[in-house]
Length: 199
Image (cartoon, rainbow, N blue to C red; front, side, top):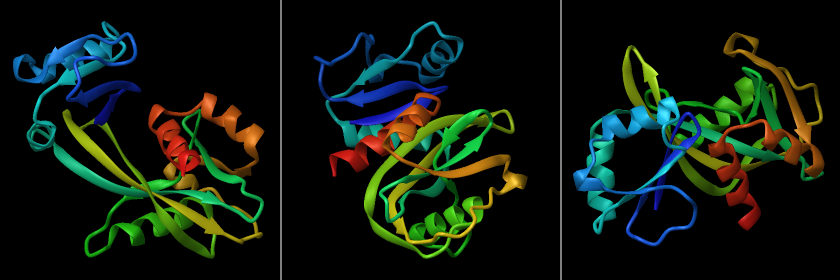
């Protein structure tokens, strides 16, 4: 199963006709994707299941429609098991950013977390999940594919938000504060956190 978000509303690629939730089921081969995206964008539907009996083939076909922007990010824990969040555009988020030429995706993830948060001593513990969302750039939809890693840092110095990226706050949050932050975050970030919790 793959989930692609349009304004936090999911397109769920699936091989099952029976699905949880109240979203309608569309047959992929009978669906005009552009119309579907429009319906999600303007709020005509809150989400959709896209059914196909060949998920791998359909997913590749879907990805070929868009320029894919690859990014890496981290869910960072400190020694107190607090989660590192950034605040940008009136929402809490996890640090992430685009891959640069010649970089490995793990390098990207660490560099972006360091740059956006001013944190040091990062180590990758394990891969968590890949998330996907569609966004408009230069009047065209692009598919952002973000590779997420569970990271650890014992850094106790000052956290410095990357203001030029629109980040106004950086903070490690305990479990209660994390749950509150997730209430004002993005659907993809909830997926990343769920992936960490499930272990």
